[in-house]
Length: 265
Image 1 (cartoon, one colour):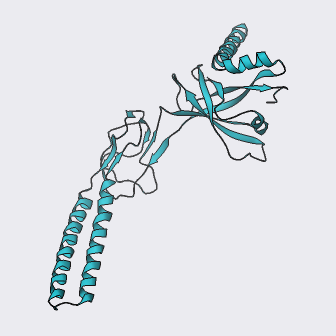
Image 2 (image 1 turned 180 degrees about the vertical axis):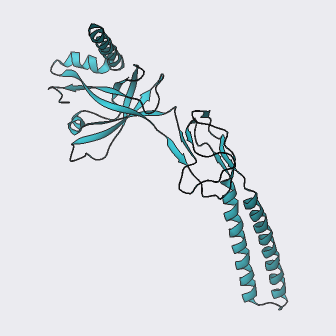
Image 3 (image 1 turned 180 degrees about the horizontal axis):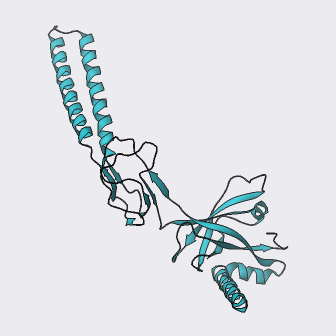
């Protein structure tokens, strides 16, 4: 019991030091103004990735390669999944040939009209055939671009749900990824905190799993209060080193509030 009390006091002291180090301006203002108090409000929060993505596809083609496995890191632009798209490529080649043929037909009809051997209607039909052929080729070219799925940001794989040579299942994500370099702290606070909490306000976050204390700032405040629970959702951004913190970890956010009265938690 005594060891637990000592550990608790150490954590409290660390949090106090962390808050004091990121809030010197507010502490000075409190000392100069005498009529206000600098109190700490705390609330439970969770660490979430700023970017999390479920990757899917509407292609009907087997997976050719998926080089990154669960937990592995990748960089922006790396190919996460490549499909065997020989059939789509053959269809695109055929569409290109069809568009070329339609272009030649239009040229021929245009020449014949000059000599009175073709009417305006035939030329218009040739133009429409060319436009349709080019549109089909463009649609197939867009499908070919989907044969390689590149990483939109630096991050790590949460879960890979497909294997090489497997066909993707409709409605199921092939892979789930996250940006582990940009983490946010999300918490729900009493709505009366809106009297003093503002965007840009610094706070400390004590992570349960690692026992680390992170410096953060309020980045977003929800646009609507939950009328039933009288709470507001707040998102903070971790500043500087995130240590060993991972998405999904939880902890306690300590926010300083300069007020003339006590803060009701």
